[in-house]
Image (tube, rainbow, N blue to C red):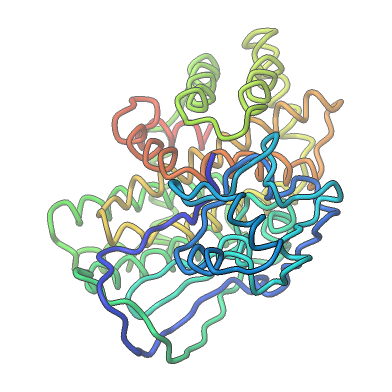
Length: 402
């Protein structure tokens, strides 16, 4: 149960001054921590990793607070100790004693930055907010307009990288831009948007596997045009699925949770309760509830799902520059979305056929805390998508387009 920064820098060597470009979603600077008023404090439920610079600072810290800090760190593992699964500095008012007594400058990087995260590539840093923070999730999912990405530049001290495939990275950036563009095309049915994004990633993956990166240009050239949309819609019969198979696949996909590392102790019971709500009365009841949900939810629902998909793609897609697994990133995004959607369906049923943004935010941030803050879970999800029959592209398309 460790709060960690998803996305690791590769091949770190020495530092140098370089020209750096930055990209952030337009709502990035709107985030404000609500501290003690937070519904689900980030200072409880997981260990907080401490960066090396802060560890050295804490070793030299003077006074009573210095003694308390040194006695409150697991020096072998490099994180703050906990008491009843709460950071030892989290007081009864849900405020940080270290911040209060020593000031913000004495916080470690994780505490100072979270839920802000900077994904680093050579010459580019991309900032995002973490969906695992409930206040950040309100900004991400509650954004009504399509997300805009802001760009700026600066000269900074940066690490050198042993290996970085600029050609592949350029193609991935182009692909991500097109995928986000199609996901944000609200003139199209949401299912078609997500289906097309998944489908084009399978073609991009083929080009990468064959080491034909320039083929990606041709793939993207037609992607999202009227002809490509019509062609994809004409293929929909290939992905028809029956009610029984759909329900069966949903049961299987929800069981993905059982194969992941558990970060919060109440999580297994939360999932178990949702599964019971969805499937306890059988397939017919599940399908009736799903149909009623589809007829009841407003256009806001499509916006929430769009923002969820754009969030995941922006955060993770270009990380494929390090492993070449474009399709795995897209499949993981789709599974991530489906898991949240099914938990929302369960909440809808439990709450007398009602679901509002706050409920959806709560579900999404819970799933994010379990999946995104465990490198084990992120990698395991990608591996499952590669090896598990019902998580293959064709099967996911059948589920999305049902």
